[in-house]
Length: 361
Image: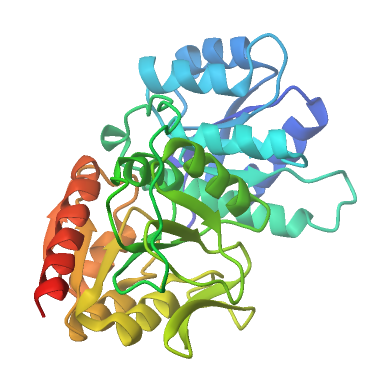
């Protein structure tokens, strides 16, 4: 049975390109799942339209004249909160950085814009746009506050020689960049554990994500490289398009990357990472599942708990999307379920307890 257009979730399309407004609006209308409430040519026009039309969701171009996407997003999230999906050309490092900043400011997701009327990736863009709009429909807008730009890290962690003996594995998807920007900089320089992150994100964005987190954090943050030694006080971000695992090379743990089939429709997937961390580190492993659509990380978190490790899951109230945390709780349970602001101190305390137990073993 078809849904009457008046009952479909409404979307305001904001872009300074008339062509792009037309393309995006057609994709939304043809889906039969959402309807176009209206279009806007820049940020100022968007704010007027939001107040006049009260759309359920906004798709927002990042780079626009008069009032750009970031400034518009800041106003929307502080004055008239609603799900916002960013539209990003992201062909440059600067464009990628702006996209990540938008996610930190509260945008639920982003979509790479098609490059033209005969673009070969048009179908991919359509699927990705609808996926992002579905996520926006599930967004817990009350749990997403604006994240202030944190100060640059000054005191840096000192990495001890030798491979890691304790590991923290983190899974994140929709809403993850914002969550990670709160969690990773809050880890102390004395964490004394390796941190491994799977954030569902395409290639080209994960390196910029790692660089942004590195500037904010006492810990060293890097995009992971195949064969790289895993050491304490370093954060490894799985590169977009590659599954990441930890394996033994002799008697030390190293990063292993591969391009095997997607899992749960994504690559990287958290489940392979979590299972490898469970196998190598056992009781000295901590699994963390943050906000996101789907169920990636649930089976892997159960493997960590089965191996004697501990599990921390973000609570529903602060999750942008509660899908992954909810699946993790249903499948694996958790030792701690905490709001986003408590993830870092709780995990750091668990890591310190692990270190103390290893020291006396």
